[in-house]
Image (cartoon, rainbow, N blue to C red; front, side, top):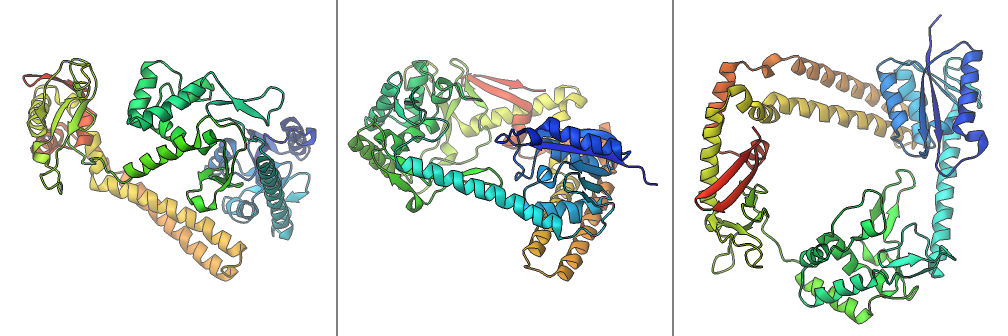
Length: 499
């Protein structure tokens, strides 16, 4: 008789806390069933606070890994909706994944046992469809309710925009937060006066004014104001008393919220709350932003990018490239570095150094460094870089990507079969061909990974180091071996190595 190693899977959504579906209730039902039938439970998997429509959950993902490794060969749940509420995923688990891995699936309260009923009938798929419909129906009702409340001027989101606060007497009513409202007004006025978003952010940081996420005590808040935060405030119609609906869309299956960039689909309800900014000021800011749109900054990826700092004030050196007289091209040959605070009279370092001169100094110093230190220490970073750019390493990545693509293809094939885009016969044929392809790439990966070429001996390391130093170094490689480059003057340049 086959020995079963059972895993019990328990799940509860945040929005559901009914007693009959609590984690404790599920544990009692599944454990009692396993003991009564003589099945050994080797592991318990619990996802507390996760929706059943989400494909990836921590405990579920771990259970899938344990199944693939043969750690468990039986899955017991209270009911199928604990495993998933996605109709296609229901079929995927019961018709494909579990059978392929020789796993017996049991849903206790629904009297489903794949070990006793080898041909899984339509009952499971029907339950999957019902479970997904349940989630979709709830999602529609919530969205419709929120929209109706917004149209009545009620605030329904969890977090109010910076500058406003919810009333203690009614959580759907908001008022201006006068403690920080002047910050919003100052941001708009400074922008109209010609300050950039970065300059406004720097001003607020120097004044030690808390940024929105810190002020509102958000989780994972940032410490400083940024240009992006300033731009968000400058674009937000909420500050002129308007509520914008349909600006974001949330997929009820993945729970991922994405911005709807098609402004034609936005629904704007005007004068839903008290404004902080006058409409004339807001419109003036949008006109300025429109004029600025289209200006492109220098995107040239120079060799010492993000490595050069001022030796005096420790600020990152500014990289400057000038245009030709006709403004048609950049003069990279005369590109230079200098301290960004020099013109603001906050730093006395007047050093201007040409990029090509600093590049040569750094290359020479790197070559010397690799020559004088012990070879095993000198080449640790080089070997890592070598592996990343080696042809066999590239093949490993290619095979891994191809394997992932084929795994996705398996899931897509099943979805097409469920939705009757392809016949059952075509599904079986293509599914088997895909499995063979996956096996082929698994074998190729194993062959490459068994290759001991990466255990380079001292002679090979020396040869590689010499060849590497002859070639043009890259920004990525220099960042691996250099922490930073401090420029005090043209005659005093300090290179801090990671080696």
